[in-house]
Length: 242
Image (cartoon, rainbow, N blue to C red; front, side, top):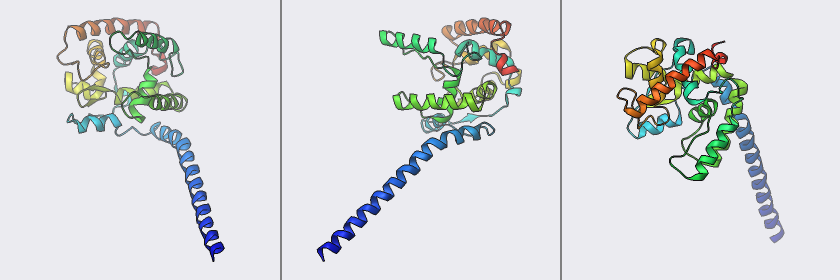
């Protein structure tokens, strides 16, 4: 009798271990396969919502998000974004190693606010697929999604998704919502100065205002507007406009 009970217990344990191994394999396959599939879907389908939008909505900011294809966004906005956020956007493959190194050196000195070294590609990966926060797990996932969107989407689609999902004010996501909120116009009708002012608040859109800019935002707007001219003259946005 004791031997039979032992066999039954051993059989149940063996069955449980096999079930756990199967579950682990399924989870691992899902973790490997899900991100590429997710990225492939968003290559053609506009991302409907992001984790940040949900978090801000819970905080009471609401969600003003209006998708526009890049063909209906003023080229001045693209140039302003590159001038402000990522001057090497058309030249790198998702990561600007020099910017990352400078950011690490700056943060290591512990002076002032933390400095970001993220490219537009990295910001898009973070905005669309990941949760807010600073952790090594999230940074690793961000790097993986950055590689995927650079490979599957290409630069034009990355810029299109970026300009449609980036936070541009409390509850304001994407350039169309920002254009309507701050200038009462369509994204395709923004002039260079308006584009520069919208982009100028991107580092801290909850603190800085495009509709009522303080001295710092005004100075930053002027610098971005001037750099946008360089972006145009040097063809630094050609990968988006081709």
